[in-house]
Image (cartoon, rainbow, N blue to C red):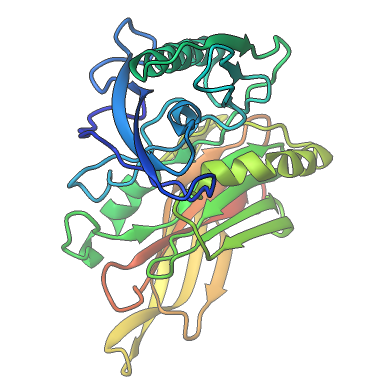
Length: 380
């Protein structure tokens, strides 16, 4: 649950830039938030919280139930996080004739795009109605509530889940730790989108610190040649406060899923990193790496000059699965983290972590790449 262990204080204050009146006014309203001490579907999994907003619109205390409302926290990692469960793409709450006996509030969920399960979404929508009714009552109005419900045939959007490579990478590169508890390293975030017996699709959300931008690449890679057969790049450098991988996927998932379909790659995001040796038939295989470094007198540090990746078979010997040479790359280390088994294939996707020197020194930046490897041929 996304609010687990969060501590937040109220009231929250949100300023609207609407120009429907000459002066902003303060309004109170209720929004549904997840209870940090309970699962979403438990009896006390959702709470109604009273908040304060400032807006130029006289009916903002109704429509603002679906707005983003940010957490107020001394913890920088939590500060600015949206806590409003009603902030769902496509959900609208609109009011007509506000302030008189013909007042009607319409809660429309027919155009929702959501990653929630249907029972979770139905519970949230129920609390949106409860929050709206309580807001109307507290502000002294009487309004009829009309609900336009989500259709039965709606397709719930499934979001890719990031694979946690960081724990393994941090352990491997521990000698380069920044010493900063909150940020021992900066790192990219890796999402696998699916695979077939020869190709794998994935997305990388790059760590762009210190630049204030979002940079995401979506790639389809041939695991036989390691050629990138399709690449899509998304960059935005302005107004990124509420832009992240989720909002990126909301806007671009149809085009990406269409490309996966053309490449015969079914969408699948249930992956986990495997480390150590792989048992294949009667064999035992393990990927390993070797690097050569060269001292750079201008930086006063060694950078990787050559990198070789191997796959060693207990029965068949060893083979090189990748070789690279570098010049002026600022690459500190290149190591194998583990691999992703490819079901129905005689290949694996080897996960490689690259450690690059930070912009101004530590914390250094960890990036990831995939190298395909056959489990049956090429050994000597």
